[in-house]
Length: 252
Image (cartoon, rainbow, N blue to C red; front, side):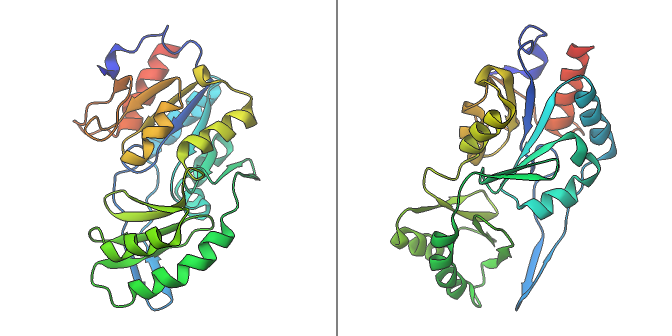
């Protein structure tokens, strides 16, 4: 991998869409969640003012901007409300894409989720390491203080589903059908793009397939995920900020 400062104008000449992961890239890592009975409370992060202006400038220069996340649509819309006219949102690990008020659903996971959710809920009752469930439509996300073997065992017995641990939560997904990579493929179809037209940046294990599906993969944490280029984890700026500064400087 090369450091991002070695990316050139020639490298990005075919790029039409820039795809951003959220946590650890556009906002700092970590989700605060508290669940008491049927009440779940989240601390929602918002994008910084500087990044809002950078995304608007990318849009003005003709770049499509896609935000790809395991988070649900409502939370993403709250986090990025000020830039919704300038971006598309691919959410819940590639399950669907929102763009200018229209939702493109890529998978239906209702049957699988309705069968396993009560079993996972039962495991969570009074469990000291389970913080709560994040409200979602297509996937199940369980926030935990550390990996919980009981969750993995329940999902393994169900068949056709997998657990993905991201360091603070489990995503329960349909095996091979709910990935950020498939979400990107569907989004590329929406905008009629090829792989060579896409640059993507991510920082976590579940971003590996997303980056592999892009023409120029950028690692925001080279200890977790590979890329053609990487953003050094140092200084006061988030990886997305560093990347946008570089792209804008090459596009001027």
